[in-house]
Image (cartoon, rainbow, N blue to C red):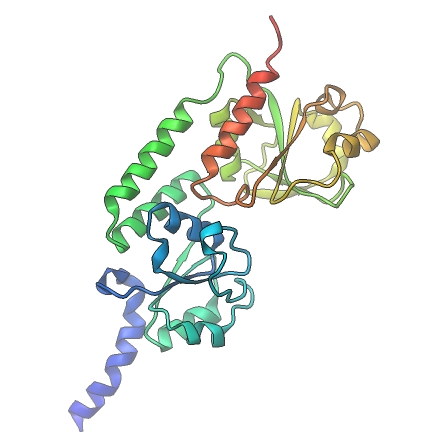
Length: 282
């Protein structure tokens, strides 16, 4: 009877402890589902894209376009996940229902909170260790750092506003990057200064504060190209802000522009190019 009871407890002990065990225990036959679009891009950048069997509805990595979609972080399809038979599930943020499901079914569950460049480096190292590609991970981190260091211009550091979202064709409901966002780190590497001093990652900015902030450059970051030139929209409401008055409003759009993934350096390079072009003539 004692042995029988112990055998019954083994699955429960495994489920309780697996959070602290790297999926490197699965030496072969990895089947990875990631509900984190940025993590999907990171895995692809490490050359391990073939391990992925399912992605979120919001995944924008071209190489995963034919993979099954299993919903988003808010409501993942457990039925679809079960059909794909993963042994590793990775998310960004908390998903208690999915974590419980994975524990009950012996699936390794990993949750990242990648909201800074340092957190991105930690995620890349974890993925490299987990999937036996540490050399590639270290190389990716090193190349990224070298490319960032090559950017920027210490002679002119303009005040910039980073707009991550707003109402369509209106300067309203502005979601902007604050000091703890990885976008601010990219901006600083590119040679700019975030006009927002708020100690957070993103905030909804009250529009009446814009004249006081008076950014010299406004970057709008979108997943797709805007249907209407942003300068036209800003001129209707805030024509006297420095950035608007001088025509310094720029769209930076690509499917991964708001994700802390391998394409971050492209965003920083685009910011740097714009800042250099707008440098005042001495």
